[in-house]
Amino acid sequence: MQRFDCVVIGGGIVGLSVAWALLGKRTGSKIAILEKEESLARHQTGRNSGVIHSGIYYKPGSLKAKLCREGNRRMVEFCQLHGIRHEACGKIIVATTASELPRLENLYERGIANGLEVRRLRREDVRELEPHVSCLAGIHVPLTGIVDYVGGVPKIRRIVRGRRRSGISEHDS
Image 1 (cartoon, one colour):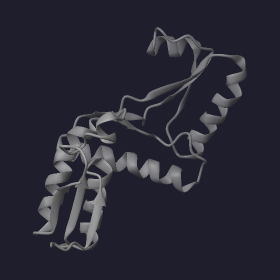
Image 2 (spheres, rainbow, N blue to C red; image 1 turned 90 degrees about the horizontal axis):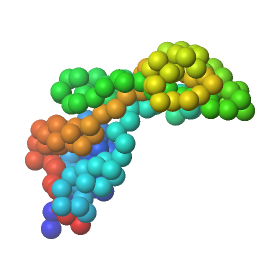
Image 3 (cartoon, one colour; image 1 turned 90 degrees about the vertical axis):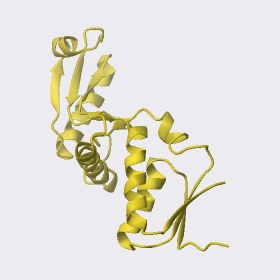
Image 4 (tube, rainbow, N blue to C red; image 1 turned 60 degrees about the vertical axis):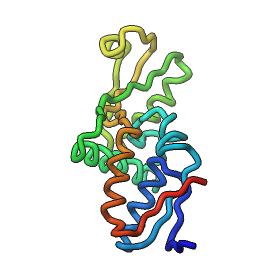
């Protein structure tokens, strides 16, 4: 019977990233990655929307806001370094009724407090960017992006295998 220092459940973006982080702390550790699907990134990673979040929705100063910003920066950096498809396309958050305007203003202030580059948009500004959107006002969050997480999994797998020095084994459950 083989012995492992650690077992990671799930061979998607999170599981492989956890294995990578563990190996960064203890190079040469023997880690098993258990995946129930026939190949990596077939479950949640293969089904998510691929958004690189900005952190605009999180309470200013919170750990969630800080980690989201740091994760955004690191994901874009990783994609650029390894040629993984991504785009900082931004997003527009809109208010379609007068009752939503205070919440939109609150999100704008939250974005500023979280250190994000956000811009208020008038109805006309939104229409210029997204002609089919009907709203009263909006805010633009350019830091939000999209990424091919499934396309990044093979690269992380290669990195993990390179760090293991005979430490990683993959087993189907």
